[in-house]
Length: 412
Length: 89
Image (cartoon, rainbow over all chains, first blue to last red; front, side, top):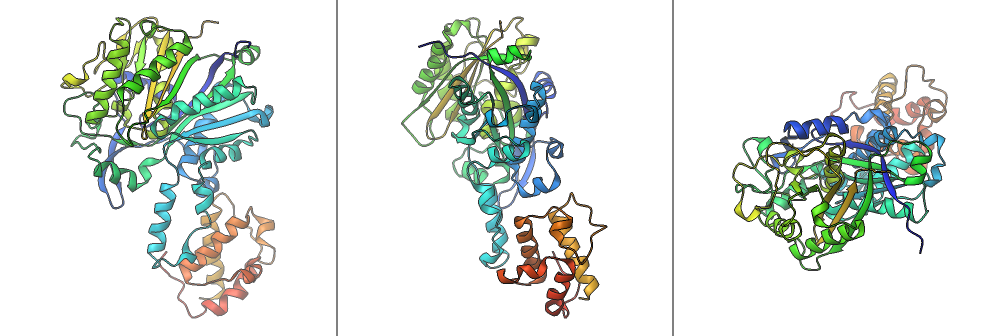
């Protein structure tokens, strides 16, 4: 079998609670700026969330915005920004050869809740149930909205993978490119989850919803006083290409995707399992032909739940405990848990390390939980590393799905 | 509601549904869909808004009556003439 084509990132578009472009987002991560704020949602009342402020009308008309979903709008913004960043105009490409792969934790809850709320005002007379309900709630809605916005006619769909989904969009895009099914992939993940009360209520019922008098202090992975998840919205899509295609057109190559792995705990609906996380990390490193000691930054998944962080730290100690070189950080401490977008957004926040040589920290660690002690955890202040060659990005999700991707500084 | 108030009400609904459109030059005797970008989903939105705002149920066989602004007035005036123009939205 001939070697599979090498896959590179040539464009990044994102919407994060603390930045609507990669430079702005990176600046926030290096300066310790959180995107968590007070948030109010029906039935739940006052809570906290990561809320995005991107310009939704940059790539959409008002009518399209009204007709579509928040997840669709975030996806369109990220796709437009990613294509622009890659220097690609879809109209000048064979648009049947562009694929769109968007990871989602859930989709349809927002619109379903809105419709039930609406018909409740009319004593559940279903003549008031909207004809928009189905096109808004189908599982491919965010990817489909991207195809409508840019006239993309290639294979486009969403990948449901709980909170591992952002990595999955990236991985699937790479696989489709390697198979020769497409010439450009838009891959990553999105989240509109702050607009469904159900997700807040369910985390609260599970004892896993963060609370704090100071919103910016609420998301505190690894800290002794962490008390749960801050739910966030957001998105991040990457333009992926085969290396030879990117080089032929003289694209700016931002990183090479050299390894990935996806596996399943097969153990519990919600509780993570360190053993399978360990296997997932090692699987991704094996594909990348790397030893743990060659990884400079591990972008952890930790969501600030008491047990989840402990399990992940156990897996991290097992894989990276002997690596003096590896630094471990966490992006959720700044932006909360962006659900389906988390994997893709957290990776994006770290990618500039290849150029600037810094590793951003995990913030809000006032008292490190002894159960979360891992070697070289970068807390509260960024660290200057100098040269960064490899980043491992972790994303795990409910029903026991684990994902890991390895990115390499592009060497030519 | 007077005929003028019905036209204003329809335009207000269209303004919500098609916010990118300029409605200032809309001709009352020409088909709405020939003058501004309105598709079948938008049309269903108009019907839904009439139901929500004014309690008017437009059965599917009558949709064709709403093709022009004049058509809307002819169809809606008998049904709305005894209603006040100001309604809660």
